[in-house]
Length: 352
Image (cartoon, rainbow, N blue to C red):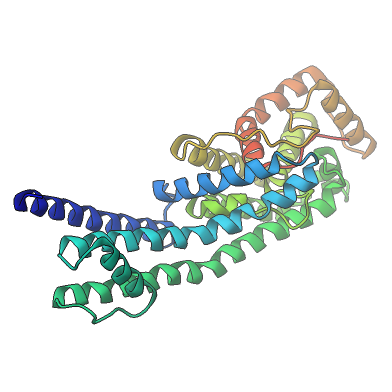
């Protein structure tokens, strides 16, 4: 090869290696250090690639329980795959830099890069600059692993807080959980307006969901320990309960319930927009057999009948109540259905 062309190729390759290292380091910092809900394209490609493999495996089974068991491994595997990809890309970037600096053949540069990345650097080189680069590569290798390890406790603490609320909600909403059952439980003392503390706890839960599931989006795909539970189902259940209370119950709207309903709608819609518009994630077809459908008028009437049996005073005009309920549910329906498909949540119904 002509010397001029070889020099140009080395410069181009070296710059490409520098860009690759900087891009990878930026992705790692934006993933775990930057306190903002920013989509990292490199991470999205890793998560989508891992997701495709798990979806292929899940399609081979028939029952929801088996699919849930398979998909439960998706988020942990994708999370562990991140530093592996980061390390590989950093190693490739430094390999290109070493070759551009004339350290030897591609095989020699790859060996030098790999040994530096996995150890504390090397002095087995003729150039001081290359030696300094090996130490910087070793530092980055340790940094990338440390970033994930240091944030694992944060991720699992957020997961634990989320699942405590999901489990407590299951105890109050029946099996399978329904909005009418939960509203009846809230009316245990004869006044559904007296449980502001419970609604305030759900408001904080929604705020945490919005913050954690957009700044650490892999949390969205961590499944509940029990197959029948889901943070998406629980979110819809709380919002359906509030919508049913506003539309059907003949009583003033509690202010705390209104704030909780607003917080829930904002949380679900912002998580929905994060995945749908920015990450360009498409809904999967991995749905449980009973589906995740919008409740119809029959479901609504059954729910009203159950509320009357529990002693709640309802509006006489059921048509107007149904219209109000339908309008309120439209504020979060699309986000709820999208996230249910995205996370393969168990079916949510308004009542039995």
